[in-house]
Length: 75
Image 1: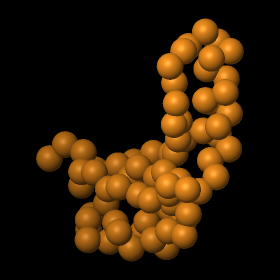
Image 2: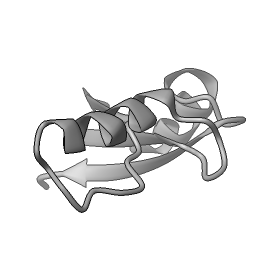
Image 3: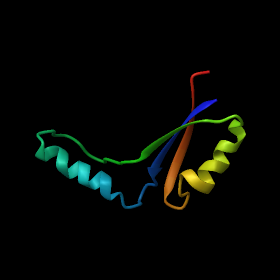
Image 4: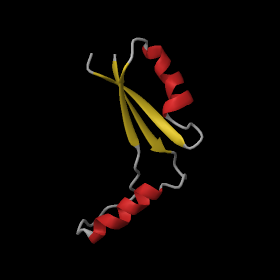
């Protein structure tokens, strides 16, 4: 199975990359941008999809400060 894991800072957690992007976009002429959050995307092939949540909790994300979402890619 091909999977995507979307990892984002939890609400209320400082997101300095998001703040930097939000401040930079108006300087480049892009108006109307707010609430920017920068996360990361991990794609991986796994044989046992039941292990994905454990992988996220133990390595891919920091559950104390990040939320993650697992998506199956293709069929």
